Image (cartoon, rainbow, N blue to C red):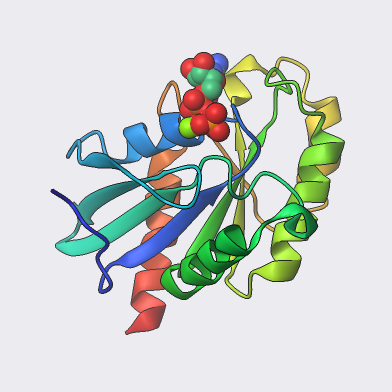
Length: 175
Ligand SMILES: Nc1nc2c(ncn2[C@@H]2O[C@H](COP(=O)(O)OP(=O)(O)OP(=O)(O)O)[C@@H](O)[C@H]2O)c(=O)[nH]1
Ligand SMILES: [Mg+2]
């Protein structure tokens, strides 16, 4: 059974429900399908492990934990946040660029700002479901406000390798 690996370079995957976090986790770890459910606070987390160029990487999906304001969190959840922050080298904040999950980009941006305020960890923004976006005018307004966001289609696997490259950069910096 895969467990938390304290040596591995670790990314936490955050974002509103239905933006594609689990789909991304499955894509990232498709070569080694080691995605496991763990009981965690009231929700449960999923951890995916991969090896890339002989180095271990770990991705943590946190359903229901990082999708609402910190002010609304109970003590258990706040403790979980602290644990995550210690574990994470990097946070991937996933936007649903298509807004098909029902959350306007404006709200997704607000949540991003909230997470940015509480995490001291670097945050890499990722715009998912780009395959559903025909006219990019609307999403471009948000993309332009951010530093080097990655465009992704987790379903099609487009952009996934860029995320792994990002992780590799962080792994190299750690050394
Ligand atoms: N077209 C398209 N659909 C996607 C993409 N990524 C995810 N989806 C779909 O979006 C829905 C939600 O995906 P999930 O991966 O379950 O989203 P999640 O963020 O893990 O959701 P929660 O666990 O509820 O927070 C599913 O129907 C996916 O197939 C994508 O890149 N393109
Ligand atoms: Mg999920």
